[in-house]
Image (cartoon, rainbow, N blue to C red; front, side, top):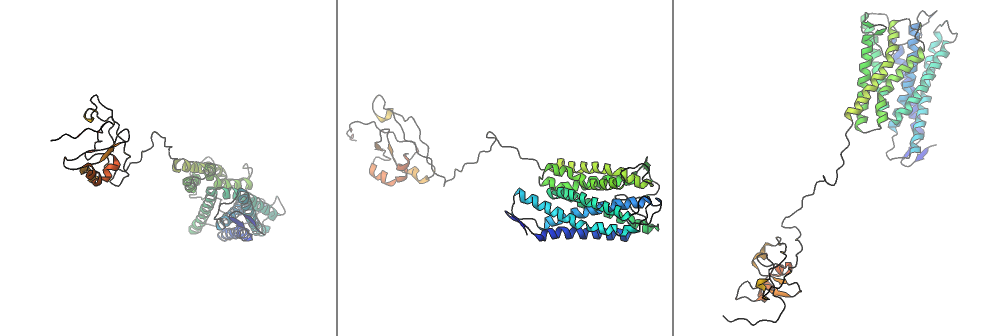
Length: 414
C-alpha cells in the first residue's frame, strides 16, 4: 500500500520509521529519567510528596510530545522526495507521518502508567490511569506540534534543540546533586537550583529565570538563523522561537492548572511562573534572526540606470556600412565647385587600403575614377584596390568628387 504522486512515493517504510523512532525516543528518555532519578512515582500519602508527583506529570507530558515530534521529523528527513510533488501529496505524506509517530509515542503511555501503580494518592484510587491520561495528552500535543514542524523546518529545529538543552540541564542538576552528596530529588522541567539561598524576587528564583530566558533567546535565534537565510516562510521563522518553550509551558499548565495552594515548594512555583515568559523571550530571538539575518532583496534596475555594455572596436570588428556620397552641381558645372554634402564613415578595418586608389559612385549611380598619379590609368587603380572600391572611399579616406553627367570633354594637351 502506497500513496504515489509526481516525484514521490510514500510506503510502509516511512511510516515504520516514524513509529519506530518515536517509540525508541520515548523509551530512551524514560530510561534516562528513571535511571538518574529525574522523575519518579514514589509512594505518596496525603500529599506528603506532592512536588515529585507534579514534576513527574510535567515530565511525562513533555517526553511523550517530544518523542512524537522527533519520530515525525526523522522520518520526513529520511524519506525526503528528490522531485517536487503536488500539494495534496505533501499534505497526505505529512499527515501520515505525524499519525504514525503518534502511534509510536503511545509506548510512553505504557512505560509510565505501569510504574505509576505503586504511587499512593489520597485523591484517587487509580494513579496509573491519571498518569496514562497525561501521557495521552502529551501524544496529542506532539501530534499537533509535529504537523507544524513538518511544515516549517525552523520549528522542528527549535523543538529538538530545546529538548536537548532541557535534558542537558536535567542531567547536570542530577550530577550536581550526586557530587554534593545530597539525597536525589526530582528535578523540575527546565529548572536547575544553582544556589540554595536565592536570590529571589517575590516568588521567582532569579538564577533559574535568567537561565531559562537566555537559553530561550539563544536557541530561538540560532534555530531560526538558517531558515531566515534560506528565505523560508516568514511566519514560520518568526513563530519558531516560541515552539520549544511553549511545549514546556503547556506541560506545566496541564500538571498544575491552578497554582494557588497546589505547589508546596517555591522552586516548583518559580518554574511554573517562568515558563510563560520563556515563550516570549524565545519569540524575541526568532524575530531578531528574521530581521537581522534575512538577505535583502535586490533593487530593480530601471532603464535609465541600466549599464550600457561596452562596444568592441578592434581590428576584427565588423566594418560599418558605407554611405554613398551625394553631390550637388555648382554654377560652373565642374566638380571643383561642388563639394560633397555628406562625409562617409572611414573604414578602419583595412589599413592597406590607405595607399591605393578607389572608385566611387555619384548620386545617379554612375562610377567615376580618381587618378592617384598622372601616369597611371583608372583601370590599373581599380584593379589594385578592390577593397577600396567596395567601400566607396579614396586613399585619403575622403569620398571622391564626381563630375555631373554631361558630354565628355577632350583631354587637354600638356
